[in-house]
Amino acid sequence: KQWYQRRVRGTQKVSFFKELPSILPRLPMVVRKKRICAQLFESCKEIELIPFILPSVFHIGADLESRDFQEHISPGLKPILPLTDPPHIPLIIIQNLQLIISKSHIEDSKSLILPVLFRSLETPMIELQETVLKLVPEIVDLMDYGTLRHQLLPKVKSCCLETRLLKIRVASLICVAKVIDSTLLDRSLAIDI
Image (tube, rainbow, N blue to C red; front, side, top):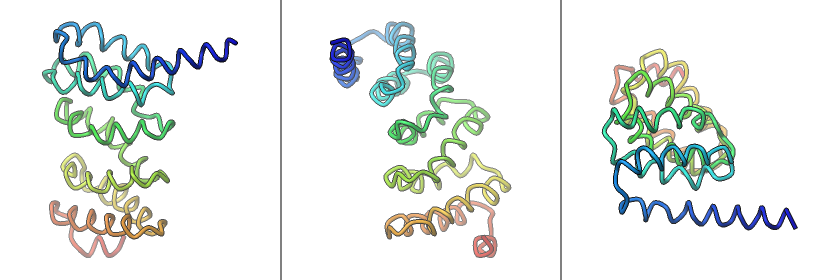
């Protein structure tokens, strides 16, 4: 009986969190920023709910100034960023990467986002790999030469070589081409890797 009650409560929470983004715009910003954000991150203690909570967090974060984002959203995101299970957590984070980067300090962006990006390239989740490969050229400015050469390009290469899916191979090659075009890397480096 207790198992059933916990499952019902869990289902009710999931339904609530799925509906919350449609309700948030009707609430005052002060309430969203100070009360709801804190409660959302408190609810993240139940890891299985995080994929349902993050859309509301990012919905609130999109309306915040950078300073408020750094004060109310970034601290709560830091313990969530390293999580890889459930696999939709990194996918939601990657889908909202531009928002996180635009609202964070550049150093925070590098230290928090790049590890998520690199882990996502190593995941077996095809949708996540494809999303990251499309996103990398847009955020290549966050990476220095060493990071590009020793971390990013080898991971993109292994992503390309370890899959049988044509769309991931093509996305990997397009990613490398765009990275080379938008940086100071020369084509011979890409051939070496």
